[in-house]
Length: 336
Image (cartoon, rainbow, N blue to C red; front, side, top):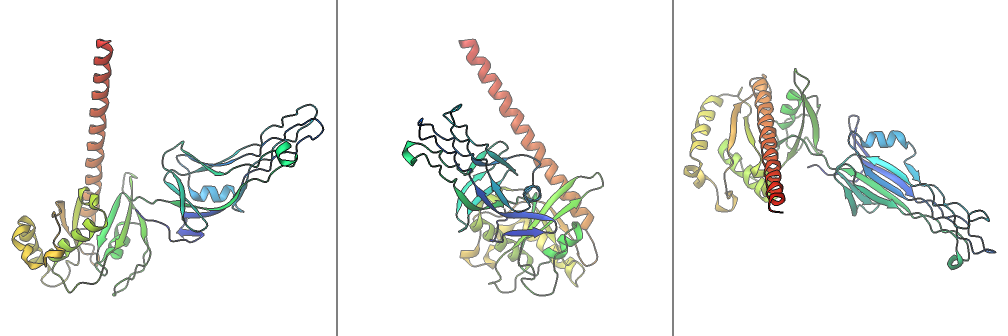
């Protein structure tokens, strides 16, 4: 997951993942002192999660980034109780964190239909307010989109993540022969012949380690993932061995494959504190070269196959749960 860094409007190409908005609830209506009438309360501003919505569409709908709900109706002889002002519902994409102007999270909407009260309308004029209306709540809020890619590239700096991303997707990251070329997460899409699209993202890890063999690197990356978020180790993993165009690459690959078959035999190569609790199991090991293009199409095919298998497994588990629920419901009705 890639989180925002605080920019008022951050873009990746035409993509926006952070939007700063001014929101204000509607002003209440005037009271009617002579007859004790109460003005209507101002309308509220809500953020409502809706599928197929983007932060770019929110910005296009509110180009001034200013959202104000309707004012409450004044009390009158015909209607002593004024009507509430019109609410303003702003449709936002699911998976939004809502932050105040100090970047503190105050709410979130994660599923379609979820609502968040962004600004409350002001009270209408009444005896308690000397029949004068109150202004609505006003705030400056940030909508921060939680970016979740289908595939994550994990590796140490200068391992070739940006080069690989540029080869398999439409992303154009900066590439150079030194560590930390990429200072922001890079996002891309793998486009397949049948128009299937896969979102892909990369992030970097520490450089405070001496030169490593490929096997040591895999163990260290596993340890890093374990410390960052242990549940990541339960995700299906593919291993791309880059820089196969270099001398002795095939000999090094054969040695690595032997070590991966029996990882416990080679753990003595690392200090105890950097040995992971569990070693990663890779569905496929694909030798590649981002320089010559070797193995790139095979890697894309393996990514597609892995995602399809994972989706099928999730669907099977969902169907199993639904069937169990129906059986349980039927048994309860039969007993009743």
